[in-house]
Length: 411
Image (spheres, rainbow, N blue to C red):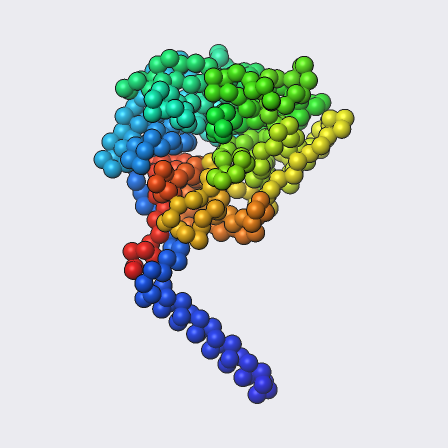
């Protein structure tokens, strides 16, 4: 080793030590230092696979349990009230493990359901006029004999019950199988956006033109409706045979959908099969390509889908090379983590991931996976009216967790 090389190594080590000591000094001693140090704080537990949360105010919220109830909870007293009066077609069975999962075809009986079935209550969302009307929107899995479909209703919450229930969307057909319903809801400019899954586990169960590429089929799309369920006059015109209300299509299984503060944009997450998970910006009349194009792989070996005559596919804003199963995403605008302002928070079911995505404009430039040493299936991220960041865990003992900045407690 030459003296020059040795000097460079000593210099490098000295710089690294200096930076470590400087960082340690800043984080421990400097007044006002607010470096992100996220920590979980359990607010509520004993939730039955919670799916969604809608804040009424900073203290109260509705929480929908996929395998349980619609609850009105108080985050301070920890009290919870079950909201009754759900439509009788709600299907919320406890799934059963089957030895031959995944089944090659749809199960033909509710006695042979997969443990991975998505039944029950899904999204809950406040009407913009909730304070005066008490109205909410709810998506759930509806049953007709031994077949199922997504259903979206509007209802008034009166004391502990739903009343004045109105069907907003029933994007049939009712078919067997309990997966890929979608069910994500958001409101922008007093219009309701609804994600609807294409409902297939194996791609080749539908030959010919794929479901998600066929606007005469109600599945595999995102809808835009007025708050009373009517069709906006400026919705896309896909032709006389198209399903009314479709705003965009070519979508496999989107669960999360959210608005981006300060813009007119709506963003949504989408599940791939083997990899292929995406984040997209919703665009009018867009075709997001499933299953004809995907960054992942199909489940059906040798599958070759038919194509539209002149397809115009819209590329995702971001995709992962590993399976994430992204769900209920939200943009962060709070003050607890100043450096996170404008970041996209994305929960994932696969491997129990929770992502913080950094953007410049609409371009993803960095991603941080949070809580690597404490993974848990994560279903929904949401910000409270005062800017506190929460997420729901998808467990038998599901939890509502607030993410706090631990570094603030050290000042």
